[in-house]
Structures are given as C-alpha cells and as structure tokens.
Length: 544
Image (cartoon, rainbow, N blue to C red):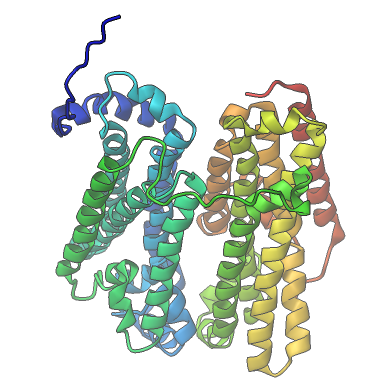
C-alpha cells in the first residue's frame, strides 16, 4: 500500500470584491416583491400623515394669538415636552408638526423591522444559506435589504416634503422636516443591520435594536424636559433639533448621516467575521434538565414570550406616567380653544377635557397593545415556519392545546400592559389632582373597556394564521390601515361606515361618558368568532 502525502497548503485569504455583491439586484427584486404591501403602507403613512397635522391645526387655530397661546401652554408642560419635544417657533408649520415628533421614532421601528426581516430572519430560517449556495455573494442579502430600506426612507422624505409644501408651508422648512424623517430611518436601519449580526435569533436582534431605540427616546425625553443636554446624545433628539420652520439647523444631518454610515459599515465588517447562520454572541447553554414550568406547551410559550411582555410592560408604564403627568396642563391648554373642544367631541371625547384626553390617550395605547398581540400571534407563526412546532406536536400535544398556549398570551398580554398603563396614568394624575382613588378607578375602567377592541385585532391575526398562514404578517397591514382610519377618520370626514370598521371607535368613552354594554358585547362576540375560526382552521390544515 502506497501512501501519498500531500504538502500542507495554507488557505488563501478570501478576496473581497464584486463577487461578494453578486446577485444583489436579484435579491432586491425578491425583497421588493415580498414587501409589496408592507413597504408602500409605511412609506405612504409616514409621508402623508405629517401633512394632515397641518390641515387639522389650520382648522383649529384661526389666529396667530391662539397659536402663540398654544405654544406657551406646551412650553409650560415638561411632560408634553418630554413626549413630543419642544416647540421652537409659533409659526404654523412648527406648531403643526410639534406632535409629529414621534414620527422620527416610528419610522425607526419600520426600518428596524424591515432590515431584520430580510437579514437575520432569512438566516434563522435557513433561506439565506440555501440562497448563498448559488451564485449569490456574501454581502448581497444585506446590501439588498439596506438598498430597499434606504429607498423607502428617501421616498418617504420626498413625499412628506411635497405634501407639506402643498399645504402652503415654506419649502425650506418642509424640506428640513422631510430630510430629518428620512435621515432618522436611515440611521436606525444601520443600527438594525448591526443588531442582525449579534445573535442567531431575530427576536434578540429586534430586542437589541428596540432597546437602543428606547434608550434614545428616553435620553431625548429627559433631555428635552430638562436642560436639553441629554438630547444631544440621542439621534431622535438630533432630528427634533433640525427645527423645521424655526431657523433650520441643517448641520444636524451630519451626525445622522455619520451614524448611518458608521453602523452600516460596521454591519459589513461584522458580517465578514462570522459564518452564515451564526451570531457574534455565543448562545448560552441551557440547563441539563428542564424546569417543571417547561413540561407543557403553555410553559414553553411563556418562556418564549416573557421577555417581550416585560419590555412592553415597561414601555407602557413609562408612557402612562408621562400621560398622567401631562393631564393637568392639557386641560388648561385645551380650554383656550373651542375648536379643540369640538374636535375632541368628534373623536369621541366628552365635555370634560381631561376625560377626553384620557379617552384618546388610552385608545392610542390600545392600538399599541394590539401591536403586541399581533407580535405574540406571529410567534406562533414563527414556531411553525422554523419547524419547531412540528417537533412539539409530534408528542402527546393536541393542535388546539398548542395553539391556545400562544394565543392565550396574545389575549392576556394586552390585559397586563393596558392595566399597567391605566394604573400609571391614574396614580400620577390622581396624586396631582388630590383624588387618587377616583382617578385610578376611572383610568382602569377606561383601559378595561378597550380590551375587546384589542381582542378583535387578535382574532383577525389568528384567523389569518389559521386559514392562510403564509399571509399572517398581513395582520400588521390591517392594523396600519385601522390606525390611519382611526386617527384621521373623524378629522377628515371619511364615510361613517368606513370608520365603523375600526374596532377602537366602538368602546364606551370612559371616563365621563355613560357605559353601554352593547358595543362591548358585540366586540367580544366578533373576537370569539374570529378566534374560533382561526383555531379550527389551524386544527384541520397541514403544517407548513
């Protein structure tokens, strides 16, 4: 027997060149096709909604004196400044877009979800490895995701600028707001790209990115409510400091662009130093023996979703405290304009301005709770898509029991977060007003009556998942359309039948208004039917 010994060869270093980006155009077309519904929705929403604030402000404040008084009331309320940012001018554009300050964070949420969906999720499900086995370069997936997200941000900024200018606002200020909105989306897309390199789990990647976003929002809120120093450590603070229609600061775009470039570059560097499907943070080994709480599907569902529920609970708590602290000054501010009284009445408020504000604020929190509920249902979809559900159902676990374990958390989670927010609003407001017990009862009741509306959205998501699981993420689009109709329907005169399709307009307008059980029972019945249909469909169909 003859043995031939080959000399030891050292692997040549990989050459980074155009081959690493091969197939980018093909993946970009694929991603655009997959996001053909979601991408236009958030582009149109963020591009069009800021202009609607201008139209509504024009209809509410007829004179410059009213605008001056409105701006003064805002400045005197640290809670309102913390929530939305400071007012830099009494010009119509500056006043109208004051409440659009949160859009810099909302577009960040959209870009974070988009980038992680087309990077880390693709690796987690194994599709990236399958595609990478063809003539697709290593950087093609990340590049296509970033190009699509960047295009969405730029179109959003352009659309927003054009619509603001069409509302007779100065072109310079309109361009400043549109540029800051697009720059915020680009900066947080880079943060999401870095987060996608950290862990093998899309859930943790989202947690890292949203944790950074939450920290930036907190720095901005505390800084704006104080001496303003901390705001300069937050990209969200930089966006607000652009000061559209108030002596614009164009140099603010430089640090935003720097964040976008540096984070995107870092994402490419980190991608080059890891294997496909792996993350930079090693996964923590689990205990050799599972805890008793993991002995069934309910314990497993709780283990998978408890971190998300905790994060949402903290966010609702902080927002509730801010809303409670703002109520006293809101009453004084709103009392200066009869037009605002009329607008709140159309939205669904009562004659008591503080009660109207509580009603509208908790309705907005109910929409956010519906978003949490959809994310919980999507976890059920994720478990099936990753084939982990098949392994679980191979044991002595029924389809219904498995589905209910996750759906139960999707139903109970909104109860937890809304009650926390309601309690926070009631405690802070009651402590300031000197009637803690009454205010706490009012806000908890206002939060409780919103739950059936949230559960209708849960039912819609479950029904989509059970009947057409491939389109389960469309539930986000359904919620987005509901938000647009809910927030703009009463102001822009949409047909009443269209407004009535949104479940959030039907709960009793507590506190202050009389409680009527009929709409609550109707919403509960609709939610029960949707949930039953979704679970029954899941029980009868094949796993994907």
